Length: 126
Image 1 (cartoon, rainbow, N blue to C red):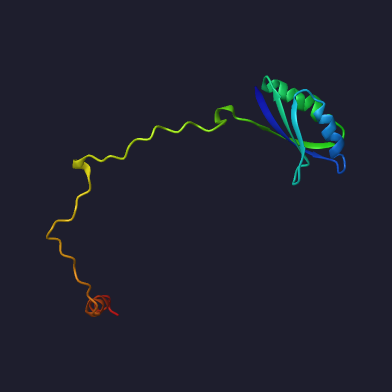
Image 2 (image 1 turned 180 degrees about the vertical axis):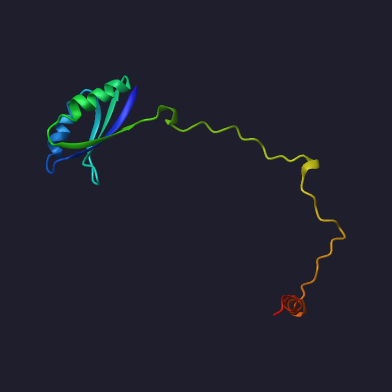
């Protein structure tokens, strides 16, 4: 089953009558008046894309007071959520675990004097 969404611009004040007319078409499954740059959105379902094109060209666009339409076609391959992959347990073999610091590891002391800074500035010519 092919599905399309049609965004419709129409003349001011003609929305209610157009919604009634659109609901009478066989391929139309839903019709809603909306706020924003478009006035009406409708959902069409048919057996194939050619029937969608004919419904839009031969019926919807020929209705009085319709100024413009935009058709959005559904992509069937992207429909619905994809199944989650099977979760692999987070087990790291003993030989691949990260190395631990050696026992004799000594942390360096922080040097607070400005001696190192002055040496660097002298080398740069400051």
